[in-house]
Image (cartoon, rainbow, N blue to C red):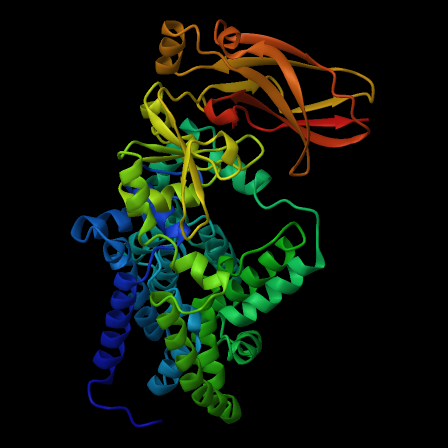
Length: 554
């Protein structure tokens, strides 16, 4: 074993958390981090995209430091604890080797300060395997309750938690004979009821989106090749060619190591198969990192050549990571990859705020820009999501409601001729225009009686639908009968808009009664399509006003 200095553990973890706190304080928020900061402004039991754990963690940190550091403060704490929990999971340990493996795993360092759901998910994954080890060794009531609480924490972090639970059970089917497993499941379910109730109130929107709508695209070979390359990088980048094979080849010595192996490899193949359905982000396998670290350590410990390579690659990886950290803080690289993420919102948001007198900003279909601009300007900003783009939490938060009939500025990057003014910025020229009374009606929903329809090639489509109008919107439209917009349907094949069909009804007519019937001449060749109702708004944008309506033309 390599000689380590006295108090090496305090030094290692102290530097780990200190460097990440410094990085957190001096690095501009990424788009998604600003979006999750918005989650924390509207704290709830659930969101369109994710469970609420990340929002709660950000809320606590931002209450202490109203800055980038606050957004990331407790995220850094969790990421540091995750590394420590990984060390506790290793029973036969070479501490110097463990440190080297952590230094070789760049994702632990570079993403360890970012306020994204993967960090609490990884923390609870590591904690889950520790609780699981205690539970397998001794299924006491206290260990059962501990396991249940940790499982609930997993589920509140990210829906990927289901994979961790599933592959752990698969690794040890004898668990199904223990009544304590079912007790733990029931306790975890009880703790998860608030989120499930939120889903029920919102028509299971997150589950429907992730299972049936998200990431469905025509297959490209690059999806699978990029996924495999991404996994080698996320486990390295340089040592990925050691760590992934080590994870596959290591023979587990106990139930916990077997669960770690099943989970790491199971997650890898689950998303490998998912790559045939659409593009898979490399970070979706983040919880597999826990198994990779622990199992790689156990394998490399017994293989001298692999161990030598890990110690050689650790300082090289550390230099790469330090360079990456520096470039995240200092804008030196002209490339878009770094600049677009970390160097775009430092000065111009305050200029635009001054020119727009601090009035709310409305822009089209960009939760990233809306969230990040709100964070750096302090100016309420609304992403009006068009019907041909995906929904997000701006469809559900009470932002649009608060702007109805109020003065705003419209920010439109695509229609510069219609805008009154502009300013240069690091995200391009921003064109904007004053709107004395803003109108948008995303929360009026048109629900078809059926989700799936089948018609002949030359037949019209007949849809019976009900209209749900929030009381505030209904009252506003009754008081302002001059406010009226067209209603149409978008016809989509896969995720591509083919054409629009007028619904032959206006907004004012639509809200007069609850039930409506539509006869639509689709005139489409044989195939599978989906439709979506859309209502006009200021800025010429049409909003999401229904779920997908699937149509098969035979």
